[in-house]
Amino acid sequence: MKRIYLFFGVLSAQLGFSQILVEKEVNTLIEAALNKDVEIFTNNLEKEKLQNEVRSVKAKYIPKVEANALYGYLNSEGSLDIPTIQLPITGAQLFAGSADFSTKGQAFHAGVTAKAILFSGGQIYNGTKALQSKADGTSYMMELRKDQVVRELLLDLDQLQMLNVAEALIQDSEKRLEKENERVEKAISQGLAIPYDRDKIKLATLELETRKQDVLNKKDLLALKIQQATGWSTEKVLKIQHNVDPILIFEDLNSNNRNELLALQSFDEAAEYAIKKEKGTFLPSIGAFGGYSYTSIFNSEIDIPLSNINRTANLKMNALTMNPTWMVGVAMKWELFSGFERKHKLETAQLNKKQIEAKRIDTEEKIVLQLEKTKKDYATSLKQLDIAKQREAIAKNNNEVASKQYRAGLISVTDRLSAENDIYKESLNKIETTIKQRQAAIDVYQASGSLLQYIKNN
Image (cartoon, rainbow, N blue to C red; front, top):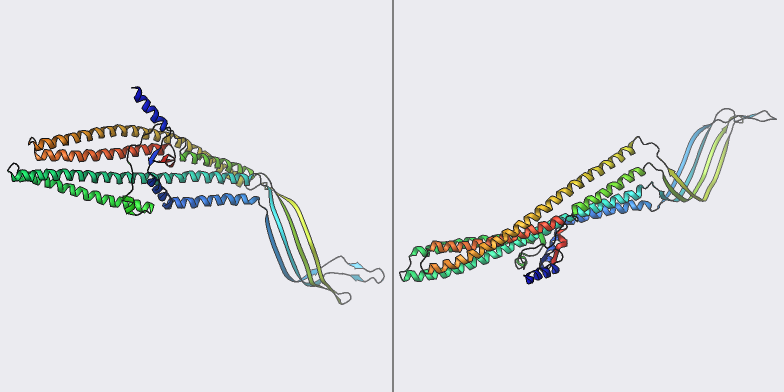
C-alpha cells in the first residue's frame, strides 16, 4: 500500500501542473494552423488598427507645425467721408462731403506656425487609456479563435488516429477470418463441414472489406481537411504520429484566467476612462503657439479725387515689408455651454459602463457553471473509459474462447463470427471512448483558461 501512495506522490510531483502532451510534430502542425487561419490573420490586422488609433491620439501631444504662403492682387473702389477741415486763411474746405477713391496693389505673406496642446482637461490622456484598454480587451477576445483552432485540430487528429486503429482492427479480423476460412475449406474437403460455413465467413469478409473502404474514405477526407487548415500535404498528414492516450488532470482548475473575463475587465477599464474623458470636456483647453512670418505689400496705389480743387490725389507705395515677425503666446478655449451635448455624451458613457458591468457579472456566473459542467463530464468520461476497457477485455477473452470452441465443433460459425464482430466493435468503442475522454479533458482546460498554455511537447 505504501508503494502505491509513493507512486502517486511521485506522479503528482512530476505533473505538478496540468498539461496536454503532444508530439513535437503535432506542435509544429498547430503553429501552421494558427498561421494559416484567415480569421486569426484578420484579427491581427484589427489589433494593428486599434494600436494605430492609440498612437494617433497620443500624437495629439506632439506640436503641429504648419507652413503657409499667400500672394494676392487687390483692386477696389470705395467711398471716403471724413470730417471737413477748413483752412484758416483761405477758408477753403478740405474733404467736404463724400469722396470716391480707388486702390490697387499686390501682397505676399509667408510664415511658419507651431501649435501644441498644454492641457486638454485630461481628454487626451483618458482617451488614450480608453483606447488601449479597448485594444487589450479585443486582443483577449481574439485569443478565443486560437483556442477554437487548436481544439478542432486536436480532435481531427484524434479522429484520424481512431480511423488508423479501426483499419488495424479490420486487418486483424481479416487475418483471423482467413485462417478460419482455410480451416473450413480443409474440413469441407474431408466432409467435416458444409459450404454454408464457408459462405458465412465469406460474407463476413466482404462486410469487413466494406468497412475498410469506408474507413479509407474517411481518412482521405479528414486528411484533406487538415491539409486545408495547415497547408501540409495529405501524405505528410497521414504519416503524423499522434498519441491518443487519455488526458489526465491532476489539479483543481479555476476559471480566473478565462479570456472572456480578462476581456470584460479591460472593457470595463475602457468605459471608466471614457467617463473621465467626457468629464474633461467641461474643463478648459490650453495651448501654446509660436510663429515666424514675412509680409510685404508692394506696387500699391490709391487715387482720391479732391473736388474742391478739381484735382486727384495719387498716392503710391513701392513696398511695405514686415520681416521678421515673431509671435509666441498661450491660448485658452473654454466651451461654457454646448446645448447639453456634453452632458448627454457623459450619460451615454456611464450607461455603457453599467452594461459592461452587468455583462461581466453574468459571464462570470455562466463561466463557473460551464467549468463545473465540463469537470463533471470529464469525471463521467473516466468512468466510461474504464467500462470500455473492461468490455474490450471481455470481448477479447470471448473471442479466444469462441475460436477454440468453434474448432472443437461446440459452436456454430454464426456464434464464431458474432464473437469476431464483438471484438471489433468493443475495440473500436474503446478508442472512441478514449477520444471522448480526451475531448472532455480538453473542454475542461478550455473552460479554465487559454487552451494554448496547456499544450506541451511530449
